[in-house]
Image 1 (cartoon, rainbow, N blue to C red):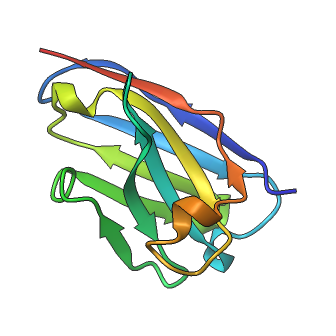
Image 2: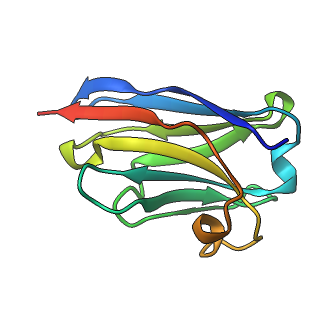
Image 3: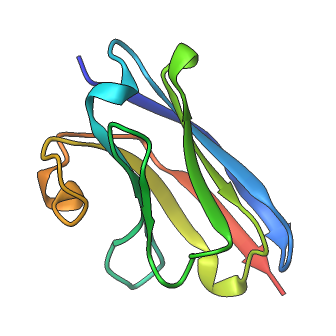
Length: 123
């Protein structure tokens, strides 16, 4: 199965940092594109970052230079390091496995999602 279990998240002040983790239950992360997405209250879900099978990464403009997606292949764990957090980064963060091998198709093709972890950034 493609179960994904998230951890991390929490409440921090603006300018602070958090690290999110997402562990796959039964497969190697290198065999799929993997992504992080977020949804703020009252807003649609949006893409944050995607990592491909080779480890290449793509970020949304809003987080470029502040967030880093990475993976620990030995632990089948995907990470998202969030630095220089802003209040607008507040939301529920989800990891997902992309069924399609394409950055722009990750969200629409995602076949497994983590349970979500809340990130709250206060001023």
